[in-house]
Image (cartoon, rainbow, N blue to C red; front, side, top):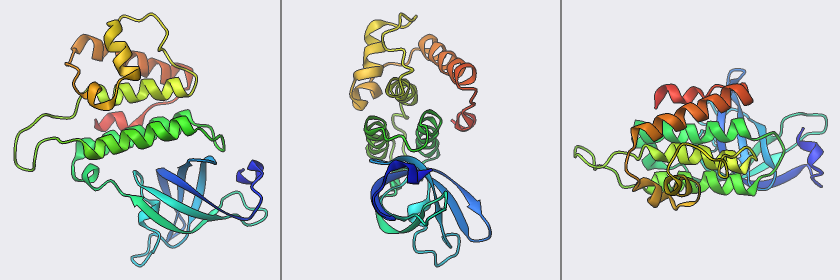
Length: 226
């Protein structure tokens, strides 16, 4: 529970990224927030499903904010009592492929991050990947252009695994060494410039799927939509 983090006060603030949310009762939501300094935990957002809900934007997946939380003695869930939106990543929300890729990023982090264990490295990875996805210049509306790189989500998953201590970076695999290094250490634009290699892409997909299913007993639901 969040009170195990030795927070000195009932009210605390932190920057965070929303990974997921689910309804609670008629008008509330339980939101999974990955914060910069306190890690991942679930938060009660009261009345945000009402049309007048003031904190609605702060409770949506693929959004970042500066949150204020209140933890009542004896409660398992903090309540979000305020904050400010840092970004809702509007360009990501305009394109289905970008949006589901961003949701994939959030799901991977959610699956690999235990509750209440801060990980600044994973937080920076997720925020940086979302910012790159937001600023990526694909085709203009109604025009043809370069699609989203097929390597982006694979590189993100490999880096998230590395940050979680499960990585394959130093493992001998059936992928070109230069490609492997770029996927792990290259800047996001460099990843985007990699040429598509169907055999390597298929190999990585099998590797990641096998790891999540056999090692974590998890299935990534967002893969169905990408």
